[in-house]
Length: 99
Image (cartoon, rainbow, N blue to C red):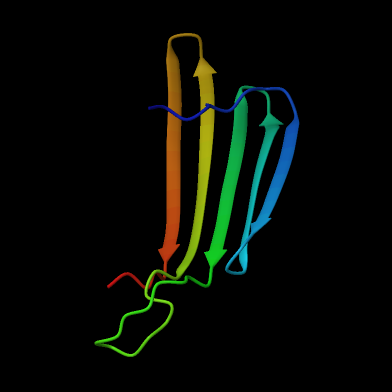
């Protein structure tokens, strides 16, 4: 699987969802041209759910709780016709309550 590379066209998207167990999720994408031959694409996702599974041995009622954040920045630079540079930075934070 490969994520979308930056392009020289401006783009912005956002989506959100809500559900049971206090579930809420949001995601966004922004693609911008920084200068000639240099483009950047930022993506981010946040996902949260209280959880519902009961763990009797540990006396907790949200053993499958999820709180997740993910961000990615891709930067493309084409200084000359025969050279193309693509850099990716990823940040993730997971605070899940799995048993």
